[in-house]
Length: 469
Image (cartoon, rainbow, N blue to C red; front, side, top):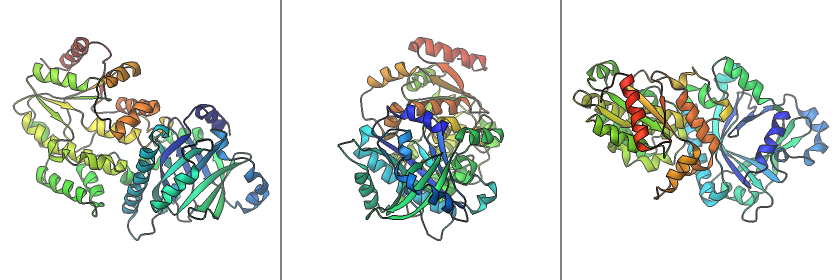
């Protein structure tokens, strides 16, 4: 219980509505365990074996205290799973479930934008012997406050029901670290079933995961469901599961036209005669300014990702679940890599974001701050079939400087920029993911100062690594 009590203090000052993307996992026996990945630390609820007697014993207690009391005193905690019974493979079911859940999440976010925060929710079974039988789905986890006059839990349930989420789970806490999870009909609100759960110490689980260089989230213990791709084939395979999505078919056609089927990354690497430098960093850290300057100083060609060939599809894929969205950006990385290999035979290339960016966002969006994959985890390793840059610069600024620069930009703000702007823990995860990248590492440059000082620091770093201006 101690970890939940600690969470209470952190959530008392939160907004009256809290929303999380969720994934739901069942083992062969249909036992559901719940992992809620809050931005800073996960909470883990383990299915209680043989819980009928204990449930009966605590039956009177279930109406006295709810799990939401650990965060605020008047919250409802609702879980909307999107469980599919279709006879397709696990990955296809996961993708379809994720698409429907992401759509609901965005609809709620857009309607109640000022009161929404985003994170992840995962249901999983920690018994490794059951991994082969697990079925993983997505869903949405919502916290609503009773005092909110704009909307209530009923409003959210109605919206979910209209999006074909016909049932939901209502989570209650009972004494001694035990929780009761009620399955309810979203139309009638009738209780369909209930099960008992034990609140586990998430830190203990995280420590075990760290010792095996694994993370708790099923997004990173199951490579076929991971939003980080280490080959062109992996990204293409995910997109091929979206056969009923015309944009995915279009993207695959573009990829096939621009990426040779027999491309050899070693041969591409040998073709490079001039430096290939990538500049990474969060929004408003000065990437554009630095890439423009280095372009002139190196007499280089500047590239972006996603490249023009797939740029028209960006808005569509940005609204999709992380695993599909990152597959899109991954395809763009491979398309531009083929182009850069040819360009670097005659000129230097400066790149505004590349694989590190694609990966960092994939990791930050799928984890809590405290259960990110540890250093040395395979997610931070460069793909074996993607051309490596000569050097990667990672620009960082303080939060105060970043906000000042953002305020002076103007223009439309994307869904992800809104998320980035209001979630400091998300930004921390993003930066930490960049810092854990390996082979090549991201060389950090303090970009708080003037344009001249940042350029000077970048020039010194380039020269230190044998790149002459």
